[in-house]
Image (cartoon, rainbow, N blue to C red; front, side, top):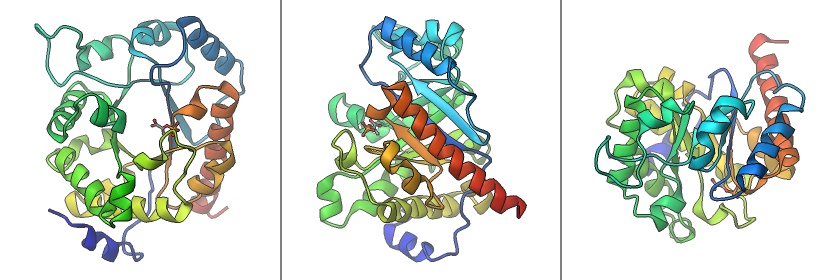
Amino acid sequence: MLRGSNFRRLNTGRVPHANHDKMFVAGNWKSNKSFNEAKEFANAMSAMPAIPEGVEVMMAPPAPYLAALGSSGLPCRLGAQNVSATGPGAHTGEFTADMLTGCGVQDVIVGHSERRDGYGDTDDTVAEKVNRVLESGLRVVFCCGESLQDRQTDVHFDKVLRQMESAILHLPLEVMDRVVVAYEPIWAIGTGLTATAEQAQEMHAAIRGWLVEAFNAEAAAKVPILYGGSCKPSNADELFACPDVDGGLIGGAALDPESFRAIIDAAGRVAANRMSIDTGA
Ligand code: PEP
């Protein structure tokens, strides 16, 4: 495998930083909100000023709300929190990637640690779900991240890069423009603990370096790498300012329209800054 030690070496300035067009802010409501609350959120978001230039936004509501919000609701990309690893057939309770497409879904979160830890999503299942999403023409938001024990025993790079290897390495180059990676240290999800900007940048650079070696520099630079784990209005500017952090996957702070919007605005400031650097303005 492409091992963590290689990526510490790559994290020395040789790896090109992100050059894809946009910052990406993705919300994940998990199993929260009544249907009415979901519609109220959509209305509140629609009443807000336009999403800043250079920012792409996605919200992933609970699956039963997808069709309704897809046809009339959220003024942003529509995401699903999960998908079946199987195709159509006798699979009670499952929903396929093609069914999501029919509901207006554009992005699918796969490999979230809550599904890996609580609902039996193994590395193989996650890889199959990634395949299904991409085969259906959707974009995948692939989650990876280490436990606190992994970090304390200094195996966090190996852990994350092994997850990348398991789900991403086999993909053909031509689908990589529909892959988003979300680095989510498990110890920071819903705990109020956040990775420092240095910890986030270091891991994002390692992931970028892995993508360079697995694919090529051009493809790697275009894959948005999001940070997730207690990202909120008070820390979004600092995290998003890291050169390899291209936005965030937001849980708790995405439940409130104002705080979600504040994070979108933080991404807007970073996008404006990156655009002015690109144009030399
Ligand atoms: C998440 O569940 O993906 C997440 C990042 O949650 P939170 O922002 O609440 O830590």
